[in-house]
Image 1: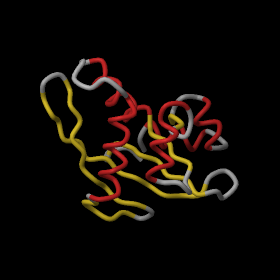
Image 2: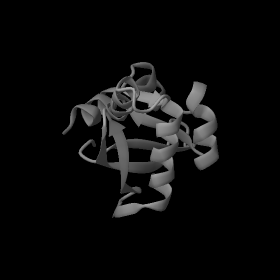
Image 3: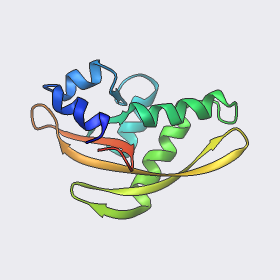
Length: 128
């Protein structure tokens, strides 16, 4: 079992997992409008590992903002499914790191939240 799935199992709710920083809420702040544009009926979150990928790209100076990378991730999640999974699919997205474009296989899983509300989580392909 991965660290994320262990942590989610230990937490009683998605809300707690978000509060603890294991998941990053993408329906707040600068990412909210991008999330609504792509998945207007879902609460979107990303794992902290996906957040680190975005953060590293912004810190490298090649990309200036989180919102642009988040848009690319959500766009690719919608138009480039690679492999179907129970409750979602994998997809590939290129994220610039320093002067290189690196391809990452991510996955999006659709599920019910704490009260059955529609949610989706973006994670690395090896995360549970």
